[in-house]
Image (tube, rainbow, N blue to C red):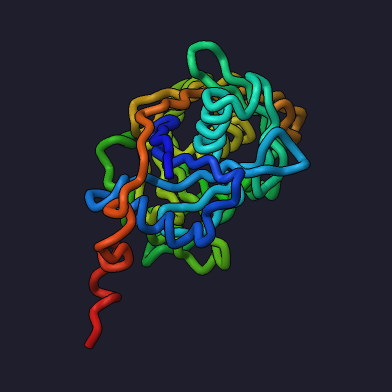
Length: 287
């Protein structure tokens, strides 16, 4: 089976053409092929499939095998994969778990997504972690996000402990949320780091988290479209939109979609190791 290793904004993916329906247990395959060091390693798997609702369907699974309704960085990669492999023209529509998204691939490999309107915005959604009350906001951009504004020092902090505590917080269950930490530098520039559910750690970028952070910043009057967003990878994505009060329209995300390499799986890609042990040996010890 052939695949492409791709990256968008620092998120990396294994992308597979599954229009033949060859892949049966996609979750098991994802857990194995996304295991770093022993296999390809990735933040998730993207399956390109047939649909009657759009140019093609993109099915996305997090590294732990759980399905996700939407992944913006992954959707950009799916769009470029489809163009490179003659599955779609430069302008296309993509069916995702959260609806149909339009995409356009430019000659330089950049991809622009036209996104549905975000919803379920709660500007003040405090959560208690230990003795501290975290003042954050929640919003759904395909998937749930929680946005926390910091004053400074975004890059020197270890966001994982607080990110994990918020990701699993009872106040965000049952689905949980991606946790975004944001510093606003100026109205047209913000910085974002994200702790992602499904990966259960910080990723170098989260496309929908970038959008959630930019839109939330704008709704608080801290930012204006277009917003350039610097991510942990050092790559900057651009979010543009129109605001009419609290109504967000014409939402777009523009950024890279890199074809890192193309390859074929061998038996060693998915055999001879236990991905669950690698992720958490303490929970997999047989007494």
